[in-house]
Length: 237
Image (cartoon, rainbow, N blue to C red; front, side, top):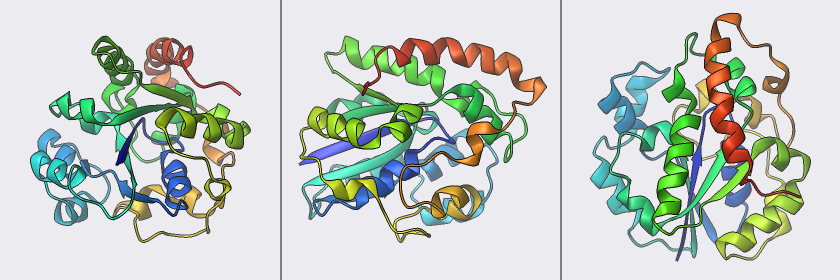
């Protein structure tokens, strides 16, 4: 079985990629299975926290048992946030095909600040993504990096290359999906998924042009350092 693990920063096209893979007849998708674990362990306050804690197990081992259990399709696509994994034992990543999804930090931070006013580096995820990428590479893995801007502008080309790298056939069904909420959305969808629910394919979102709050410029400068290092490894058209 192909177990594909997307390691994304927030306010990216991670949900769009999940929708893309969900169109495949051979694939089951799972939306951020460690979100409740992360909220419980970190103690951070997120919109809809109480509902999330009730909807998902807070024990990481219970979630892992499910992920590595039996599934009735050949491909499992797991959408994960980098900052969720940061609090876990990373060894489970050795048995997954890992994809790092990155985005220009200016766009991430400007979008994230619309929901949480003062994000920190852990919220953005890019520093952890960079160090995790290197740790996996040092252990002999060949993690894949894709950049959301490149995907949006070259969806078919990048998806074809991505499928080749993860060892599954490409299908044109991955380019489009029905607009609106999905049954596999997490319970937090009402707080975060408004833009992607209005989409039916890979397209630029309003978050691409939001201005960066001045007080977040130092965070943006530091995040760009790690983004540019990972960008060098990203799939190109």
